[in-house]
Image (cartoon, rainbow, N blue to C red; front, side, top):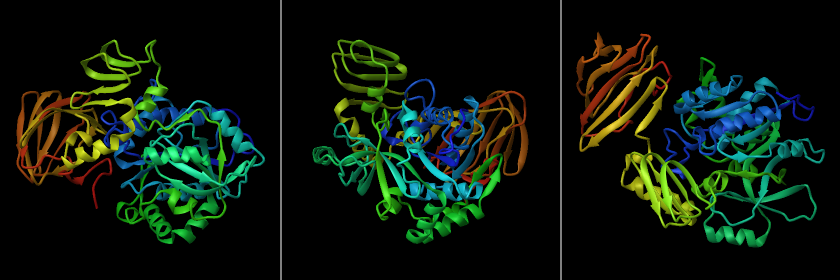
Length: 478
């Protein structure tokens, strides 16, 4: 890591990696959101964020806030880039950015009471991080204030949040008037016309102790619940998991609305970053390498007489003829086709899919878990078939289901299977029936992966019908 200057040595970066990432559906879903995928380039957006901070020498080891369900993704992806020195905090429920940053600040204060917090979303692209570092080192930056970093709004976009500021000519620090979260296109056009709006980068800089003091005034109950969530939390294998019962009582609100809009010493700095929040498929197209016709083609794709399009397939042959400026995403369980200009309106489609209870908006057909992975092979009315792989040394939770029975057949390897307290060794071609509400688990203490086929039958087959009694990954609900 490069030598840190005096102006950055007390900075503790906070990486916010808990978002669901639904704006890039169907690639990004809550089980594997966009920050943990290589949306642009070979490394994931999360990995790019961590590397960017490390190479710039921006402060001490980071604090990483992420959803408890994504801890295995965080640890695996940090190991892949050989960056293991980080404080990782698991949120058992999503409470928005204010509680997440408050938890990080309380953690940072224990490490260094004189520290300063610098927050980073984990799913953005920044190509010139040195510009941010230079801004932080600028002698005109007030280190006793709350600083937001704004990007010049070059075009109307409903993918970005906006910061309205007092238009003081030549000022380095600008007074904040208000925040607007992802407005409609017409509203965004009016913002651009008015000229005193910046895109909200989601990055903030402030003294840790001052932030905690101010939150105690503005959000005393949130501070109480967050301190309780830390006090009652558990530390295991370098991961700190907040207490669910306490943390979910914290008010669910963004840092903009909980703090920045309510204080007099909030400032915004206009910064010339090569930045994109990767908030829509059109943004992905803009940031990706394009061919001579302006197309981005990834995977098993063939296109003819098409221009300015983003076409991606994760397996199936996808052929596009004579279409310009479109987004085409093909996956094994979902296909998205849209005009590029409509990509920002994906949330409207997601609301319709949610009303139809489409399982495809929640999870991929292939899902990575801490213990291995599974793939949905076939599904229908009251039945579902999965292929499940459990890695050596891993164990699934002891669990039961209210609405479904299961049939397991081992196809390769061997495993210890427990059903209602009875343990048996199962090998290839062995089968077991698991009735509704029977407690069960599978463990692989052996040196090779075990693979089995699971056939589910029942009136409801959702993943939320898993009642865990014991779990080595800390996923037992209280």
